[in-house]
Image 1 (cartoon, helix red, strand yellow):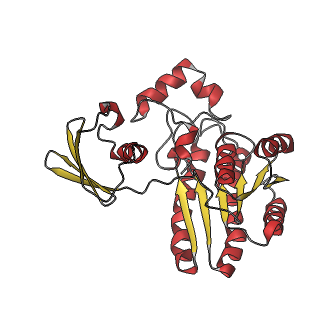
Image 2: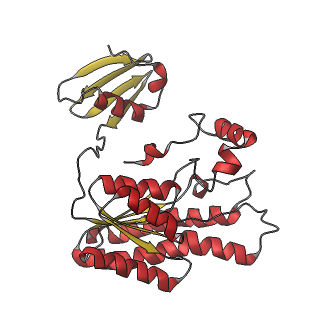
Length: 289
């Protein structure tokens, strides 16, 4: 029997895996216990949980970044001047990669580079400009002759009612959130295909999976929804060429885009608590894997 608070598990079995891992219980031997009234058994890296008549299987493969796993690799992170991008850059750097950080604000990127130390290249770029996207990939390749990881994180969105949205605003939102993601994936993907390996992670949003109402961001939803299905298409097209293309769709996390309107606002926080399964916003560290 393990003494875990019921809130650590509930029916969120994915949260059980890191809990057991931290306790050092990820052994090959059987582990039996009752967690929050759920019968749980761990056998050779798989959690087997019985909830009433249902049985759940969860593969236990927690990723640890305690020791460098990306030494000698080059990773490009866009939108790295703040928020999720800054966190992704730090995580990849901690894992041993040389990180190429890109955003419009050079001063923010330099500050990030100073905090990380060595193995950082700063590239100031406006990703609405195709030529600057090409420049970014070119400079990234110049670091070590290869690009191993691309994190398409740069994003843009401002709320406006669909009936009032200017076409120029809609097109800019699509350009930053979708067109630039495709173009950068294409540019890096060509090189990755040539060498037979690479990983692209496209940062979508939960708003690419559902409608955003009462938040009025139809152009952002359209762009992020496009990222989701474009990722499916690229992943299927390039998988046998050694290039993995995946997407994550974060919910509400405290960033420059959300801090004032959501996390610092009483009504915004109430919305997050009411509309998220865990009743809270995300923590940046929860995206590290």
